[in-house]
Length: 503
Image 1 (cartoon, one colour):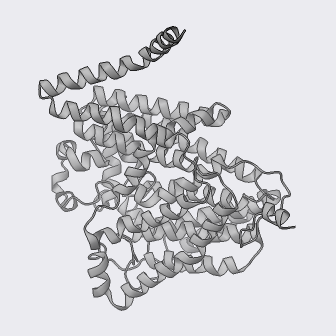
Image 2 (spheres, helix red, strand yellow):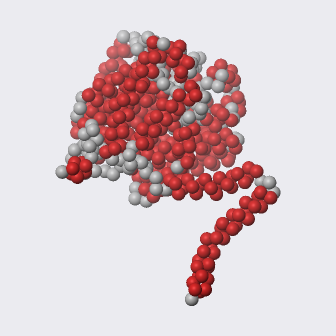
Image 3 (cartoon, rainbow, N blue to C red):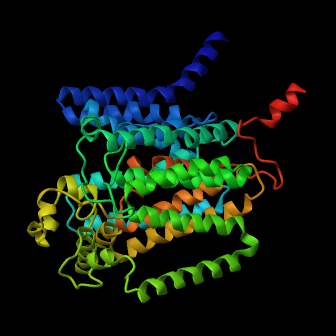
């Protein structure tokens, strides 16, 4: 009997041993023939990939540490790394790609019961397929294309990482802390930049922009703890919108004071695109909070804008005259800005390589910037001083998408963002009078800010400027919808269950 049991046990374990034996033989042969890089690649696939899967498949943020770490990484990535000369930004990539298998598995599991998420995944797969086809048929070089491909994966991974946030009262507390106290750090850095610019430059690096602030009319475009004023602008815009969301959801006017501080920081940054994006987001938030009177709000807003524009024209003041001139609308093509030149040439490339585009890593993205600028040279960019200095090449978003994936690929990506925005809008409207209305409204504002800013910025998919944005959007997607009419948690974030247990 004992021998029979031993035989059955041996047979049961034999199939599980065969892959290990085969792997050992494969590794032994590779060592014998001196396969260097190939051996390393196999070792990574065999060891790291399964470890990443098993380590992340049950991962979930139940305490809100992703919100805090996401915000800290956004500040450190573009500021402190200049001081210590360490590429801290790669911590974001390490977090995203280290958990990537678990993220994909989690989102796939969630999509089985979420038809909207399935539709978004389908659109993204269509866009990705067109990118790969354009890469094979276009003029892509392997390294540049691979680098751009991994970069294009970052924003879906950030969204998926946010889906691993199990939203609760602790997350409310963490988000409130980010909003309540971030202005102290930002304002202190801006004050240092204004009062003692030399010390600020030694800490955070030399200022990249010495132009006058076009919004307030004096001073420079200040950047605070960031490498560029655009990061201060988009971050302050998000925190200002989040403050308004907290004020509306919790009926406490003190949040309006905090929001005013972030608005002042946005004005000090001197960034017009981010300011217009915040104005659009605040209008949308006002519309949602007064949804019953949405037609009245839209009518009043439209009439006010038209009256304002007519008044400016009557006084011979052309609205946004400088910007219109930079895009060739007023003074022809003689004084085009860098972004206008990149945009027009992106359309030219898409027409030249119609219908699939020129391929990943060829134009307007980080892949082309780092590894392949030949298409820029073919287009005559060498005559521009800013190109010779390596500036502004990734300061746009849509021209690179249009050029590399063609008009059809860009249309799929635009469709994806529009569908995501509409789904968030629907969820935010459904979350009114629920405990998660504040974060839903904040997430919708975050996506609105990024999309409205995308015509002149690549921050939409850049973890340095959008990490916290996508975490918030994903967390709202994952959040369970509570029943309407439930009182929102207090500013202390008290858990109702704790009250009941205490009683």
